[in-house]
Image (spheres, one colour):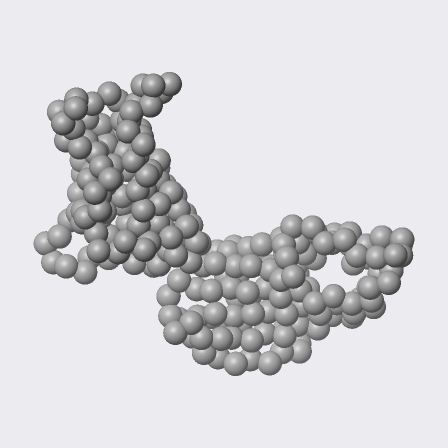
Length: 236
């Protein structure tokens, strides 16, 4: 197996709540989507289910909770990324259902999201959202099946940080069957420009020994993705 790796970096310019018992911690990749599912016991006809948000980093002094939705009525100006599916009362579950979805997640979306009705003694549901770096492998993660006709393959690991800090190339590594590919940085071209990096893994002169699990890891596991390669002797 002859291996070359090429690294390229690009630019991409609570307060406590009494009576709460449902808290979910959720971690999602930057630029991905997330949905929060809120179910509330039977309400009176005039009850309102509200979604509010407390950012991890406060931008406005004195603001603890920012309103997002009241039932299906939007209270935020960002109507492209925040969507509520207010389904009302479900006869099967005997509960009211409201689902808040956020698209194209940003670092500023980190914080606590709360769903609660204005009904007396209603228990709130809280979702603590954190944002992590995104990663993808090209041509794809999952499973790749090769045959003897194919003599080489190029795997690209693309990672994007949540902040604008430049990615340290030594924090991005390829592993084969849980063993680090030692010459990961022996051949590289480095173009530093902020918070996105691509690490190319070139495998030439493919053989049966190249079968197995290839894993790209960023910053000791802050983000990682796998691709399983099967090398067969059958040609097409």
